[in-house]
Amino acid sequence: MGVFQGFEHVVRENEPLAPFTWFRLGGAAEYFAEPTTVDELSRLVRRCDQEGIRIRLLGGGSNLLVRDAGVRGMVLHLAAAPFCEIKIDGLQARAGGGAKLAHLISRCAAAGLGGLESLAGIPGTVGGALHGNAGTQSGDIGQWTSSATVMTRSGETLTRERDDLRFAYRESSLDDLVIVDAIFTLERDDPEILTKRLQKNWIVTKAAHPTGALCAIPIFKDPEGASAASLIDKAGLRGARSGQAEVCRTNSNFIVVGNGATSQDVEQLIQVVRNKVAERTGVDLELQTEIW
Image 1 (cartoon, rainbow, N blue to C red):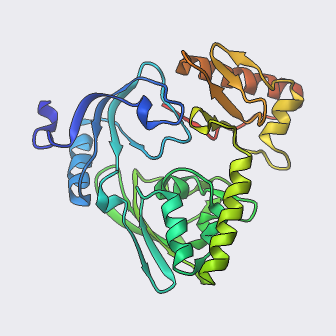
Image 2: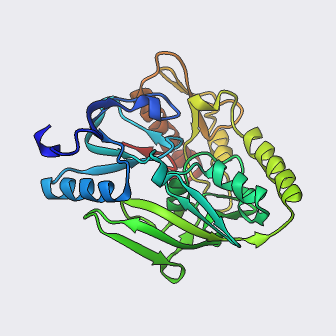
Image 3: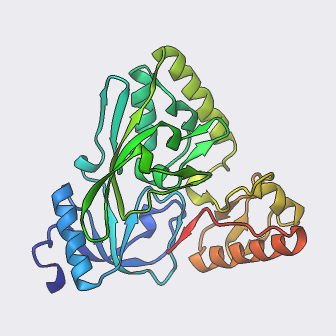
């Protein structure tokens, strides 16, 4: 591991990625690292940049399919404490990009800070939620975001202020390599009311997810004026299969995998669904799931 001399304590080779994803599928990362500080992350990113090694960032794995052949280059996983801290000061909450979104929401509700409780039940990390502007019909994370500290692919750390940020349906302008942390400016509210609202939203969100959700993930973004699930149903694809991957029978925008499933099964099923929905409804579904 000469290319990563000095980083032996955080870099591993041929690390299986399946355990880090909800599908529990896919091959290994050529290189895998869990840096312990922001400075160490920056130095590691600079080394990869110098050596021409591609970097990917692994979040909560709830919208990721890793191909069976695995991933070339470096996969970063920000699980160390400095990337997962949550601090509350007045009406503002600062959260590391590696922090679980659920932890941020519950901490804010307990502190009497309202706004993010509408996101209850959405899985993943704060960084992933910001990158994809996670949201529900009641709102999204972008509307509460005041600033974000990011790291570029050259290892430089920058602050993106509110005026520099753009949020749209399931996307944002935060496309730098890493979202190190972000500040959210929220509204004062009663902690007991917020907790009840959070619990209600969690129940509603989870009700739309198939049982055994750690083996199923939502695949497509909802196009304007329709839901992906309704279009998949209209195309007659509820329950469609490829190998051990199946379009969920309770919510057609989920793919469920069984024992012995491969990433190729899932990817082939995704392509069948996209092709048939386009053929029968004229709508080209856009992936919400990332494929490595």
